[in-house]
Length: 72
Image 1 (cartoon, one colour):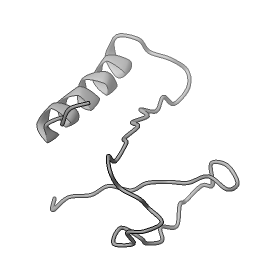
Image 2 (cartoon, rainbow, N blue to C red; image 1 turned 180 degrees about the vertical axis):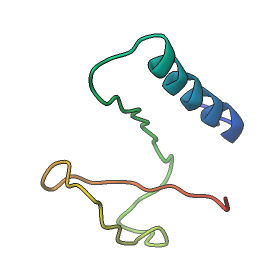
Image 3 (cartoon, helix red, strand yellow; image 1 turned 90 degrees about the vertical axis):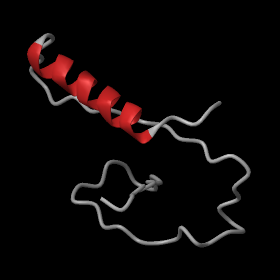
């Protein structure tokens, strides 16, 4: 796997949502799912990314959620 530039990722997600809203209208809410694998990172050993986030709606019991952010 290789690194994906931030602008390419944002543009791709915007294109998917734009296509969904204009070309392929559906009668339900669509979501975009993004899967990220952190190479050479042990979540049990390195706790610098540990935190708590309260979700508005619980998707499933015992589901893990990853929140990524930047300076924006």
